[in-house]
Amino acid sequence: MPSIAELVAIKERVEAEYLARPGVTGIDVGYKVVGGVQTDEVAIRVHVAKKKASVPKAQLVPASIDGAVTDVLERTYELQVVREPMDFSAQADTTHYATLQGGISMGPSRAIGGFVFAGTLGAIVTDNVSGKKAAVTNFHVACVDSGWSVGDRQVQPSRVDTGTVPGDEFGAILRAVLSSHVDGAVISIDAGETTAGTIVDIGTVNGTKPATLGMVVRKRGRTTGLTHGSVDGLSLSVSVDYGDGLGVHVLTDQVSIATDTAQNPLFSDHGDSGSVIVDSTGAVVALLFAGSGTNTVGNPIASVLSELNIAIPKGKSILKDIKDGRKDFIKDKDKELRKDFIKDKELRKDVIKDKELKKELVIDGKRLKDIKDVFKSPDIPGHPGDPGDGPGFGGGFSDRLAELEGRLGSLESFISPELRPDLTSSAFGAEEELSTDEIAALRAEAERQVADAAAAKSDLDNLLG
Picture 1 (cartoon, rainbow, N blue to C red):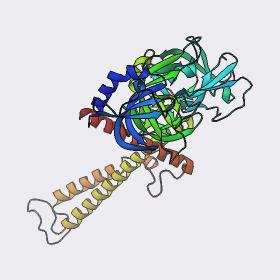
Picture 2: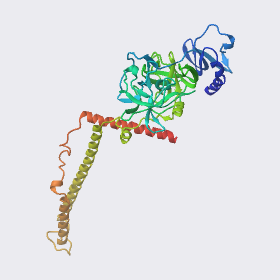
Picture 3: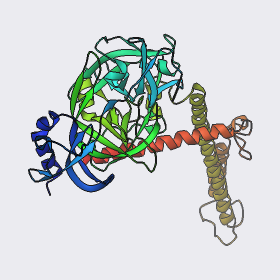
Picture 4: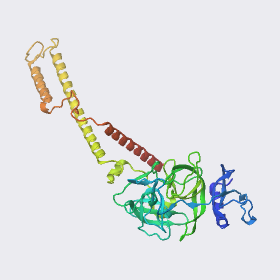
């Protein structure tokens, strides 16, 4: 059986021929479907708008092409954007999010031909040109048609979903592209808007990764919310009608997603265009733009990043966010609490030092007593040359012992009484105890930083091999 790479090479040699045939909507390399059930056999798959009982011989798809097994799938692909007349009623996720993040409703502020449009904000990205935060979605979500311009304002949620103009505007088109690989747009983010490198219902975006056959994936979109599926096709060339002014476009090297019907009836639907598709770790593999029934199509993420000149960073630690001057993850009160906690730790260190000093004094005092007890023993003979001051003692030794006692007394009293800490009770007896919420906040902060550190170490280990 040919390898995936060999199958892709065969598909690329014949795709122009097959895409030119009437009724053909796409061609890719993926799992063969028999009786409506996906198998483990990988084939060259020709997608058609309608399977027919009788097909002219010249248009018939052979059982194999250059030794590769074939399959014919009935799929007509549509852009997954919502278009509603201006007297619309709200639907799907109409939430006005205080923090811009992936998986939420958005759309253009302008109306086109009396219609307003809705799609999904895929993820917060970095604009490589300015180094600033931006949002990524589809060309056909933000631009809609050929009448778009750089600077066209965008709204969250979309006007279909109760968004208002200009009150809910959050940014404007920086650049957009509709090419043979990518249907994408980059949206600026207005000053004062709060962002997060997360996707609603999924969590932190964990960089990017190429899609592979069988990969388990998820997405969160404006219409169908969080859904699950798997990669069932690669190197998909698909024909999609973009409507008046743009016409039919063929996008190549796309990623095909099959719905996990055990978890959700559809992987995507109209309004989910612009969602990012991620694997089980949160790594982005594709940008969703079209679908056909239970199947979905996405742009490979490497092409999206390259053609839009953006980057998808991994989630950063809370300390980095604070350093950058953002307050996405922690409030001023939490920062003050952390400062107080650090001061308390320093104070505890000082108390411990004082306790150690007291121990040393006690030990020195005990040693002096032991010395005195030994030399007071009547069994120790006096030195012949020392004038005695008692049985068995020389006067010279008594003088030295008295000097030692004096020095010890000086050592014990070098800290004046008013400066000595009361070590019989807690040094924090007059301080208010931390509340349950404050302790929980500190614990959560520590756990997040531990997780970030573990992830950073893992990345470094992988980098160094």
